[in-house]
Length: 337
Ligand code: UT7
Image (cartoon, rainbow, N blue to C red; front, side, top):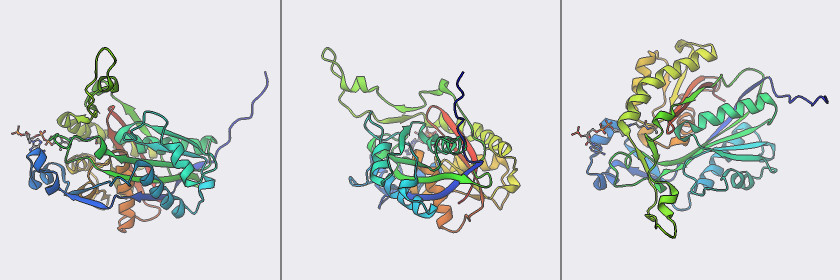
């Protein structure tokens, strides 16, 4: 049998640079309450959200991704030509095909980098970081750009009381590359497809479009969520996953500097922190208050805010926990670039 060359990667991987793009338009609770018969007080009390960002027509999935990626590359000290692979986590690129990643890779100026989208909703960014670290260590790429991006305003029904005040738009990006020391801990990930319907696109595309014999609804299939069930799952099960990610990285809560869970709801973040018994010194990401829930973009946006506000420093340990539709989850400890 002919022997093949074995792939050879770097000993370790880490995040080399982070970038974020927040749409310019700030939308306070007062702008969304009327259509859902709600109040600023109710929204703040139930979710911790005070305002969010909504994208303008020019702030497309591609535009926001490119902006966040340029910042991440600049901070990593790399050019687009050095990127071997672009992984885009999103649920709001509204073409079934092709993926948005090749267009982003092209606009950035990569030299034909491998590029593909992944669909793991709010857990998408952590899935992307796990894949990227494995690619760098496995030898299939030296530098991987991981993007979490959403324009959820395109798929939210603004008359739906359960979702209209939560979801928002934005993009975050991280460049993952080789490192002397381990900078991305082992991923703890999984899914519970029994709860497939808890967060989903309401109608199948075929029901929207229809056939010659049976016309479809013609109505945009919006996002729908059984908030209560998801809330319970996230608050209890995700604290265990977070602890498993710490164990897998070989550290305890006392060694942790930052806790950056998916920015779904401030009460979920607080429930997880309580259940993990996080010590006082651990800084907790609370970006949801000003950014809303941006699904795949929420973790890189929240981590970037901690860095920009001076609450996170280079070399800090950060626990990332993504969870959402699927139901899917992924968590890992990373070192802040
Ligand atoms: O990102 C992916 C993962 N997603 C999540 O993790 C989201 C998880 N879920 C949640 O964050 C929460 O379930 C929500 C914030 C969506 C809702 O909060 P909740 O505390 O679960 O509210 P609820 O659905 O249990 O409703 C409580 C009450 C009800 O009234 P009664 O029956 O107690 O009289 C609702 O009718 O609040 C009422 N209500 C509202 N009132 C004002 C429901 N929606 C609204 C609203 N404004 N928008």
